[in-house]
Length: 418
Ligand code: HAM
Image (cartoon, helix red, strand yellow):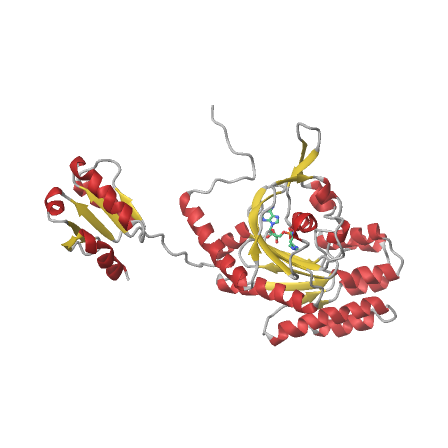
């Protein structure tokens, strides 16, 4: 009986894993240079963690089930709530700001299509304990620098949930209505706002989209709403820092996010060539979430790349991945030299990627296999050479070969492999 994998999940053959690891390491090395440290949390969480403040959208798409003890558990649909829970559990004593990153699978029961999977990877950062615009800036800047490091063309769009929430709070709209407004904005259903709130100021605000000139217009629209106007100031501080670094962006004051916990700046990055699922990154500030999970008031900001989409985008945009290289193929000419050949292999593997024939093939076939692997050199181990403490070193591209003393082999290969 053939058993297939669940819809929306994928297998990753070696070549794909090589590319995924290569890209993951490039992003990770940047995260590390920004002094982020890796963390991990369970794949399985109590469903409640994401019910409290992640929002309707996530709630609808969660894999939830009862475990054998009758508890409601789920496969994590995103990481931010888990990181906040972990902070409350075990990170509170660390010096602030706490900067952590993760690269792990998330699960959402969505309709699978190009770029949208039920199991997908997110690579993200969370910066806990700083409420300033400098933290917002550094987070957004890191996301941009990561895309640049990968050679990806992208666009950055920013909004500010706090402007909208403060305005709605000043108008006396309760949090449930506020959440709904943001949900409609995220879903692109602005037409529903008229029935839900009808306030012209809100409708005017969410239409504002463009470059930094928009902020001045927003100031006018928000005349008489002091708190919301002050929040525009926060956005313009971040914009000022981004301008100083030459980062390009558009501002969209009608930007909602599918997750409800955002309180401040929010941003998304998109790329060409991915069709409808072109959002490769989403993030923002969520100052109330840790407190909601029982921790002390702790401001926080972060983002997550949709790692699968980043890879898809790199392919679409023609970014070339380096070939995986096998440095050396060791070819024992008969069974009698196996013990020596394995000893040589073991020494070479301290420094190089080494394959040895494991199918007891004839020399010619082993060398053919070396060509298939793209091996740069073959080390031919035969009884005559061995009796002199030597092996034959063959350059696989030119076919030239010479004998080398076994004790000099590593040095010779290091020189020739550069
Ligand atoms: P999100 O926008 O829901 O935010 O997800 C982040 C990214 O994950 C998206 O931009 C997208 O690239 C990718 N993604 C989402 N769903 C799928 C899917 N079904 N298949 C493939 N990729 C997908 C969050 O999850 C927040 N926790 C981000 C964050 C971190 N905010 C603050 N800190």
